[in-house]
Length: 419
Image: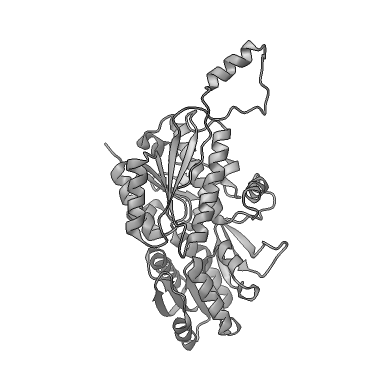
């Protein structure tokens, strides 16, 4: 378990009284009184720190940690210090994720639950948080149902839905490279709803699905799937997976020379994946959900510098997911002036993130009645290296997420609130 807190036995009122007694009439900006108090407000992060999604999970944790530092430097949550408690959910074991969620809520008495990278684990955790009535922020689990057919009043999501991701890229792939597609898809909630999204896009734009293989999470050998894909003669081989699975699949596709015969693409990619690939395998068209190079967007460079100071590396979309997730908890409580979950969830309905948290061209907001964050999607292509060593993705266009999200009714979310 990992925790962070800023606390001291001296209250804010005592500090001000001492200052007045010393004859200090004013404390001019940028003087900041840090969050103080004996009882911290606890945020519980239940996320993968081992397995296929370890790298992405750890980066979400880093984003949470930076947010906690900033929250405490700005007065904390309701004047109390914020503290982060972290548990390893594993990358694919729903039983472990649920057990850790219950521990954080029942034993550690967290006021907020965060997680999970794995969509299936996020759905399982949402059942627990809903049962317990705890505000739950899902930083990076994409499957549509989280803010769709199984939505809950207490569960909010930072990353995009899978349908938003396919809507952002599918038509441009068909227009540029052809409409015959073969799919290699992760066999769990994330892959399933990505496939559903692409299937709908193919039907909408006259595409053809030549075949689909479902691959278990944690697959290391993709050779049989790649052989089947090339035999169908597709225009595009579409990889609907993430983490180490996507890394291994792309490496093997390039080793087989498939990139010389077909276009390789997918839905979302991650900087963690691109960093792990050899330069020759940094190819294909993808969505990025956040990117560290955004000229002219306020506060992005400050965020990048703060993360580099902590880790020596640039932030990824996952770092931003975790950062926004933890900040969402503080914003909800401070806006509601309460740690009551219903009051905080109500306060988040329609809330726009402040620019220093949103960090993208289209100011992100939580859509009322669905609890889905709507912001920007960065559509582009992977590259061996761009303007700097860690510039591994070229943004071709920035898409407004509101145009990709459909309506609340189309999402299938029928939210009910406690009486």
